[in-house]
Length: 217
Image 1: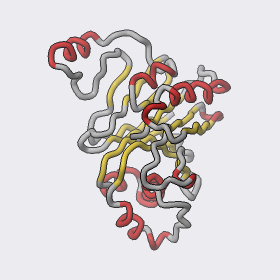
Image 2: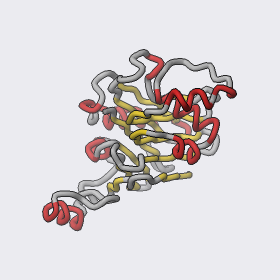
Image 3: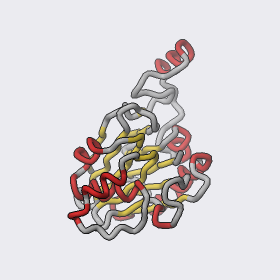
Image 4: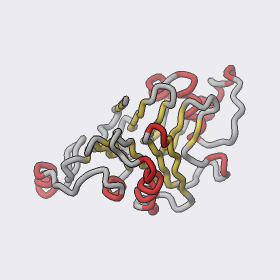
């Protein structure tokens, strides 16, 4: 498993500390990706993406994240595994992409650059949680696989947008308060789980399986 995290600040956010903040979020997810990690910042727009890597398919540096599309428009972090990457590569043959490596991450981001998010998600076979920054449209997109195998939490707190593979990532970046969601906690104590879309924290929500969340400035 890997871990992803990120933060998009409102106009009042401190962009100068953005890298450090998302680095803390990343560090909270170290156990999910012991093979390395990095943070990418779009300081002008107050956004940063981070990822902790567990290298499985492409062990080289070509598989490192955050991953940029060849056309420079998209930056993506991703947790999961796609089983039909070779099929997707073949379908992109006419696009004459100069592939940098063999990672499924690169395949996903190039599919998005070619087909768009929704068409790409329809074609993906596997388990995944994706966060994508569209630099042209200044849009953040969060995606979760149909069965919800890979977790993805998100928050809108204090005017800022945060996301992470685990709630502890949001807490590390002060992307949520520690205010308890009493109905979520009650459900956990009664049934042993929190209903889909919620968490035990008031400002943290789990993206539902098969859902795409698009956020614009």
